Length: 459
Image (cartoon, rainbow, N blue to C red; front, side):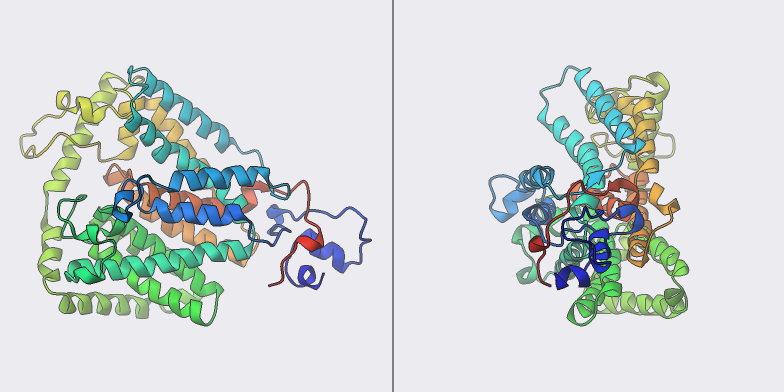
């Protein structure tokens, strides 16, 4: 009983403090008031979800770990089933974003089936990874991570992963093969973008996105903890910054910088230290350039390369031609790569380097493949989902921290979304998960049942 009295800001704890009769009905904690779930245990579905997130990092690359199949989707499914079966779980509040999300899925499925390729497994995984999973992450995350202890577990996982990414990125660029795990990361024939930090994603852009997201989540953990975990979180921030830089993706450099500045300007304690933080970041960058052999030429090459810009311009121009020609039907979900040779054209001043790539703008891609209605629905999902929490009034300080992390996460997500296909499961899922947790006071209703005191665990 003392555990309940000392833990929880919820209605259960307050009712017991007031001396309510043990048999009297107790009010379940209300997330809209900033109250955590009365169930302070860490259920199995939380661990399954964290495991799914961990293996989602190697989604599509499970072979690197010697696994015959990817484990992320089964673990997410098990977590969802266990959550639904939990009698003490909180409920979802009705929000229009759920209906818009459902319509987005249905319109995309219709676009996919209308092309006569309903049995195409690749397009099915595209639908799951790019639309269904992010929407589920946003809706399910705030119910799964319904207590401070569960959310700190998530932040600790992200801190450990960010340290791993930062060390791996440094080892990749410095060619310290013995420090890189899995060793397949150093295989130049695996993945894309060899020569830049790619990590377990085998691509530099998701590596940079993950490191930048880890930078922000580690900052939140540092603000919520003390002692060893605070030190680890600060180390993770430094390594996340380094990992983002070594991924050598210009949009993610801008995303980390812009997100950090916006967050820093909103937090008084950070605003006073912004000049010092900027100087420290510049010093860290200069130190890395001097310490890692061959890094400076690679950095100059990335700053001066123009081929990727040409690819973006030509594919985006092709998408615009499709939208103009087929505004409401498009070419079908996942069909752009198969038909873009009919739409990509050589420009007078821009060389044509390749055509077998996706549209390098997700909004244009949605419109070109599923029609304007598909793109509009997708934008509404973003505005009514992750973006909506930025305009809401949060109920307490921790919620404000998650709101600030959402600002950084949306920068990390938005710039690649506007400049690449952004098909990467892990960073996309994480952005929607973070924003869902930040939206907890908007999305979650009190539980129908509350656990008995015997269900509570001692801290």
